[in-house]
Amino acid sequence: MADKHIDQPTGTETVGHEWDGIEELNTPMPRWWVWTYIACIVFSIGYVVVYPAFPLLEKGTEGLFGWTSRGQLADEMKAEEVRQAPLLAALAETPIEQLPLDSALMQQAVSGGRAAFRVNCVQCHGAGAAGSSSYPNLNDDDWLWGGDLKAIEYTLLHGIRHPGDDASRTSMMPAFDGIFSPEELAQTTDHVLALTGKAGPNAAGAQLYDTNCASCHGAQGQGDPAFGAPDLADAIWLYGSSREEIARQIMVPRHGVMPGWQNRLDPATIKMLAAYVHSLGGGEDFVEAAENPAVEADGQP
Image 1 (cartoon, rainbow, N blue to C red):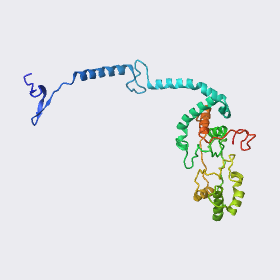
Image 2 (cartoon, rainbow, N blue to C red; image 1 turned 135 degrees about the vertical axis):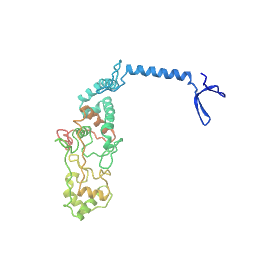
Image 3 (tube, rainbow, N blue to C red; image 1 turned 45 degrees about the horizontal axis):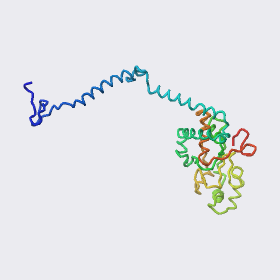
């Protein structure tokens, strides 16, 4: 063209306009880039035809291959169910107290329970199961309702003070607000502290304890899983170990609540969860009801 302008230093055609004496070069794209760009266009057209691409009112286009990520997930889940079927069948057939007799099955149950714990339990008990204030630490050997496999399974099935489940554990500590005078509260608190060596003996507090508390917590403060009464003679405290916190728990006790999982998780998953919690380090050995008066005939501690 007659009006074509070539930049003399570079020998490149300009785009035809200038500003303040500055002109823009019309440098052609590299050949490899042009062909790559064309290849991408061709690939995208093929992808739209073969795979799901466009959303419609009720569903998206299916594509010639009929592949979807949801379908792939469903296939993978089905394959995983087939893979786990023998394990779940074995768990269903094995009473939970007999799991330790099969080390391989127990190991698989613990692994499955670890995964289920991360999904369902970490919100309250923490990722490491160490708990927090008002949420029990599952790594220690302090158990309100019993720590053998059968007791843990029962807790998981029915929960603690779970509304709508008549089998849920519901016993609660009475409030002594209005029953103890300030002096009696101080004396009882002193005695509870003395059980762990944090205070000296208090004869009046010991008498008040024997009259009002020993029936659940035991004469020596050892607790009783039949009532969910905590051991007061160890160094593990759910609601705090200071004088003020203990006094508050005596006067206006707090009571934990845990949901029952029998309507949310299948029995095999609950067994696996029980096995995992039991394996964390503080699990107790199973004791038959005849040997342990704290365990009733139905297995409820």
